[in-house]
Length: 198
Image (tube, rainbow, N blue to C red; front, side, top):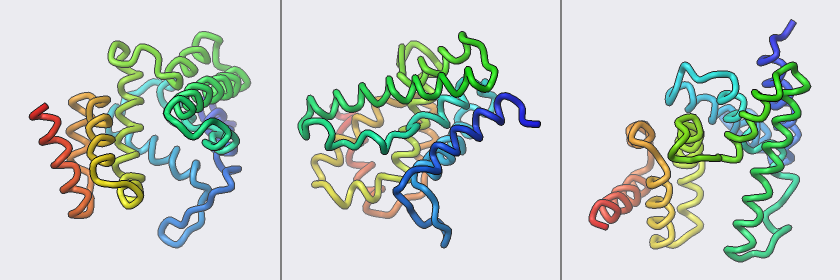
């Protein structure tokens, strides 16, 4: 019989498995959000191997059913983007909180998972900072090289500087260990040198 943690992870992963976007990893087709959530867990193990259930669940559920609210359902400008992100965080937090309650977690624990997913008290709450580090690490490891092909260098360097600024020193150390193409490494170096000079 599953523990409440195992049950919650299974329900979260079942939801991720419904993502219609399929990617191929090592010859195996996989729903993208299932791949993403597993990457999140992998980096959490590196960033904080002693993380409590609440942080582990929040990390696993960060993008819960995100694909159901496409970016183009909001205005395609900066205000629309921020409105979309704000709504997603609240919705994903509510969905994850309900899964926790359904699996036997207390209201306090379910609320904590929701708070982490909403990234409340970032920079003041160590666990929220860990979740932010993990999300940034997954972006750099799993999404950055594709992202940098789609945008001009100035925008990429700006995004990298913002990403770096969101992370803790421990996050920075892990980020510098990520294997990247020479071009990606060069862009990261440029962003960091600009950041240090700024």
